[in-house]
Length: 190
Image (cartoon, rainbow, N blue to C red; front, side, top):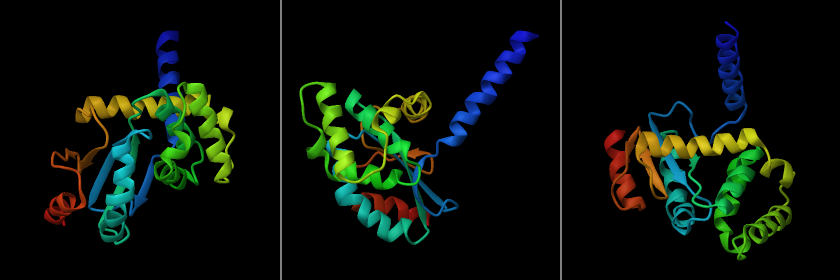
């Protein structure tokens, strides 16, 4: 009986942990189209998506209420893992932090060691004025589990093995990732 109680307590506490940590999203939460973007913050192709595809997607589909986008973590290395934890740490600024990290990859992805990259990441976050306790965020086990869970779910549910990987209404987007191809797919769903 104690064992069953412990298992139930553990599952409830795990649910509460994830209830506090919210996904980084943009758009109408009740939109007909849900786009999921599995990304790694050290991935240059992901940064390219944020610079060249996402603005058009946002303007024509997200801001108009036709679609919402969820940015999910799929860190490919320790530097991306730590950057993901920072983006996830400040719930009211998560999207702003995520965008800033992508638009300025060159400023913080420098160094031959994780320690050096972390040092550059910390300096970058401070220079942009984000009010984040770097050490607290990097060492937050709840956020760490949340980020790792995104990666596990992506690999398990959608066979994600590279970034960025786009999922539209639970279907993996298999075409070359550019705005023109995304638009064709989205127009069929409206």
